[in-house]
Length: 133
Image (cartoon, rainbow, N blue to C red; front, side, top):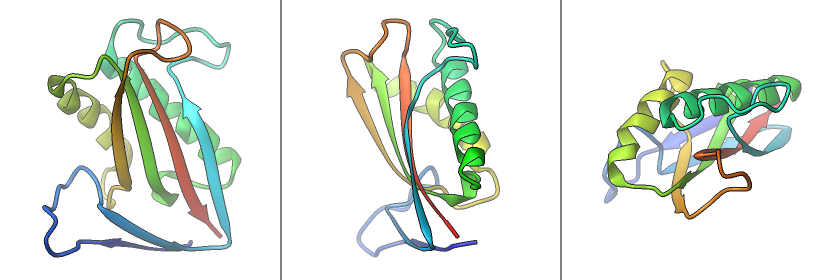
C-alpha cells in the first residue's frame, strides 16, 4: 500500500468531507477519466436523480480502480463536475459519495459547477487520481 498523508494545515478549516492536502508516495500513479452514470452496456442509470447518478459514478470509479489493482483508499484527488450546480446539491452528492470513503480519510476534492456534460442526461461526472504500489 502506498503511503498517503492527509494533512490538516493550520489556517485552513477542517472539513470532514474532503482533505485539503494529500501527499502520496507509491510506485504507480493512476489517472481515471471522468466517470458518468452509465452501466456496463452504456445505458443511463438514475436519469434525473443526482443521488442515484453519484452512486453509479462512484461504482464506476470502483471498477476502474479494481482494473488498475487499486481501491477507493488509493484515491488522492477527485474532481467532480455537476450540471447546474446549486449549493443545496452538495449534501446530496456528499452523502452518496461519502459511503465509498467510509472509515478512511477522504481524498483532496474539487467540485465544479458546469452548464453541461457530454450527454444531456448526465448530471455528474467524477475523475480521480490514485496512487498504488
